[in-house]
Image (tube, rainbow, N blue to C red; front, side, top):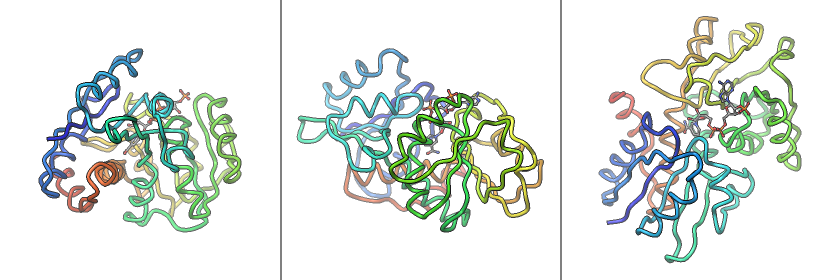
Length: 270
Ligand code: NDP
């Protein structure tokens, strides 16, 4: 039996082990998948140990996706372009391939929810690994992107890293007042910490959709704020989580599980 794992800090809240247990059942391939809480300064050491002891592949989450990018011996095109890795696969017992399945999981989920169309204007809040993973999928459908972040310098660095693919407008929280978007994506880990991002209410209008990459049993604090201010189209990132996991499964086992079916089951279990 092959062994897979999730590395992050924290990982206790993660639904990935349940999702992969369901994939294993429905695709008929037995594999183990454990969440491993990884000390901040011990990422490389922990990953090396896992692969040396026979691990076949892994997922990486907050806050290690950029470290995972640097750890990889080889990168898929989408990982290379996003500068961030959420999936490892050991190839021929020799080297570690780094991939990024967040982008495809994200875009598929927006389409499933009917939250996106070509050329939409999108505000991304956040400039970490997750934000980097969702920029190219949005450019691929000709969206215009505005980026804001608690540390503006990080948003500027991210925008610069993508400037060969399109223009990203960088703006700080205090200057969002006069802006209008079709979709707001919270790609920060603020909801994980229960912190509300100081957004102006003027961003909200009847047709806007709001998406939080974080997910949980109840609405995140960001989605609560959106709902209180009249947003009807809102979703957390559970669908994206299942989607990115399904594409990791495809990389590891050459089978794409039924994403809609697993979303329904996990929602009931929350
Ligand atoms: P990183 O650690 O790489 O980046 C964190 C980002 O969040 C940075 O932009 C950081 O800002 C910002 N941030 C952190 N705390 C706060 C706060 N209290 N207030 C405002 N901004 C804050 O994390 P990732 O990019 O990998 O992940 C971000 C989120 O996306 C997580 O909640 C993660 O669970 C979720 N996620 C969900 C996925 C899914 O499948 N549903 C997939 C991937 C991620 P600064 O630059 O100032 O530090």
